[in-house]
Image 1 (cartoon, one colour):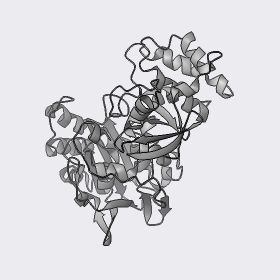
Image 2 (cartoon, each protein chain N blue to C red):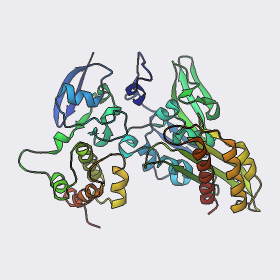
Image 3 (cartoon, chains in turn yellow, red):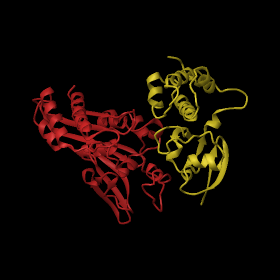
Image 4 (cartoon, helix red, strand yellow):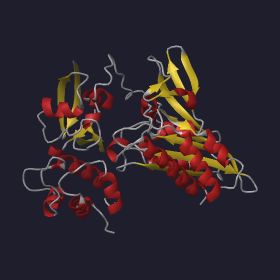
Length: 158
Length: 248
């Protein structure tokens, strides 16, 4: 076992993990953050996307020990207790989810994209979301939701 | 990581290079482009110098995986992994790249063509690691094209072609390089397709000859994604499109 310390959703955590444990399994099983979903477990579906040091990454393709010293944001860290965030509200408004399994990965990916590129166009949104599989929506409402949320991230408009 | 997830390998020890410094640089000089092993796909995407220093590399890397993977995937990781359909090994072989490997007894240089021994197999020893890969200098007038076909954007290509050549004063292709990914157990250059193009003006007739030669020269596998005949036809189509782009 290895003891690692890192930050999750703004709070320092310290956890003893097997070196073989993926970051996704660590978040879910060790830290109880089950918002991060595991679909394919080999980097194809995007459901497990989390944000590490500001960049969207697949938490199934990363060992927990590799996050030592890093700052990790999960889908839980992108909500608050009072009301829906603008991104959440946009997903709701556009019916950008049905079963919800892919949604954590869509939301974390979209948040990272809009944080870095608030003026991204539809082609860019589709390019970035191409790494996230959704079996319900057909993607159109998800793309609309992300585009509609740009203003909340400081987009200067098209 | 997928290798571990699929239980294809069970290494007793994994070494993370996270804290090793100096492997994350993209160096560009008159001799070419040198990529450190820890250079990520997103670093290559963001480096505007590469649009002129090595446009074939820049274009090929746009096809590597997805946003989240481009944020972590590295040059060294891809070369060591040696997936037959991966872009970086394909570019390394097509461009006569030289890899630097470091081990307990020092460094050694290995030509990319000899480095890849089969699907997921390389000449890298257990106690060695890749520190960098060097791509020879890219003349400004060089013609190039890269095309691959995948079922979903960012997925592994069913087949892909990287091609480049220089042009002599009479407009003929000099020293064409045509490399294929996804249609063999390793990336490789297509000698007969290159010969079909060499010394000729690159037009629809010579492109068709090169495409036919390439298709006859590959012996692709059949798998759940595509039968061998389909891949062989796809190789011809990718050669046509890559060379059409080069000759545009």
